[in-house]
Length: 86
Image (cartoon, rainbow, N blue to C red; front, top):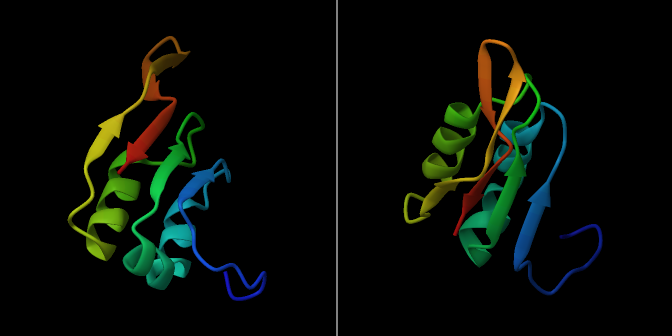
């Protein structure tokens, strides 16, 4: 926000391959101030939906969490494709 001099943030869409919890920590001030809706990709193994959920709740516990569609990423692993926060 500061670098681009944005007046506010409404949605955040993140597909950042294992860096979602770092994005949440780095965006703590923005998330608290603007409470943007967020959709975060969790389709690949570096992302952990539970850790992402915990990170968001530690910043703003008023978020509502919803899991997106699931996919079979290997014969024994079902993963969320995305998680939503509003």
